[in-house]
Amino acid sequence: MVVTAPGNIQARARHASNTWARTNSGEGERGACSKVYFLTSERDSRLENVIVSKYSSYVDLWGKVLDGFHSLDPNSSHWFMKADDDSYLVGHNLVALLSGLDAAKSHYIGLPLIYSPKNGQSIEFNSGGAGYVLSHSTLRLLQQQQRDTTTTNNNNIPECQYPGYTSYEDVNMGLCMKALGVTVRDTRDSLGRARFLPYSPRQLLNSNLEGQEEYAWLQTLSKYPFHFGPEYLSDEAISFHQIREPSDFYLIHFLSHHLQLLTSVDSKPFSSLIT
Image (cartoon, rainbow, N blue to C red; front, side):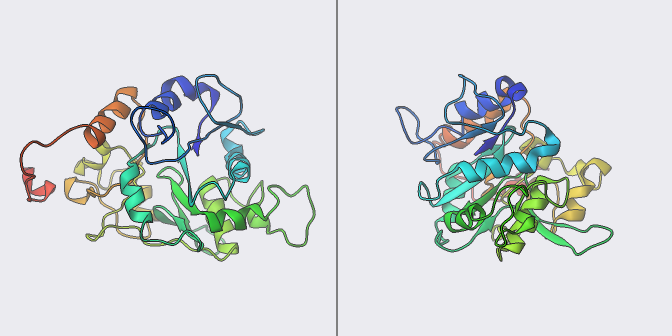
């Protein structure tokens, strides 16, 4: 499920649809996703499988995402991912990670962060920008809750309803998951590097961004140590975020899906090749 908006379809969502968000149905290149929905506030002929939400502004993003998840059929797939329209998903790496997990159990998977409000208990959640995945079991738990507080039901969990307790969609999802008894999990590779990534490859490879104020939030909120530079970019990366140039969608797609290595692969770590 790709979260987008009418003003972003031409600049972002269309390019996601042309690259990583291709599905296994139809002819041509096959994607990792059996079906991709675009969550927006208006129907658009440029996109297939549109979910229309009554929420259109960024401040209502939590309500919009709840609309999207409540519109999905938990019987239609084992796993359900939420991504932004400026994200790129390396689908085969996601499939590899999920293949070792049981979708019949409750899972909430992504880049683990910790939100610590001045007054209140710390909240573990997965980054919305890097994308997160719910198992079909978790989606069913979420759908058992009313999506907003207009309906009174003793079984409703307020943390899983709109308007939520914070202004952040991903933090609200973390609160909801905690209330449902579903926790974040460690998704790092064997070298301790994050697989779900909140920035583009260009940014992540730039070690000069380490410690810069604009990026300090990530190192502050990350549950596990997070660093910038080639030695910290996982070769098992699953998602990238802030892909704002259309050409970057196609560049990453070409490198990850079409480039063929005609000689044996160098066994040296990528970071050792950079001087």
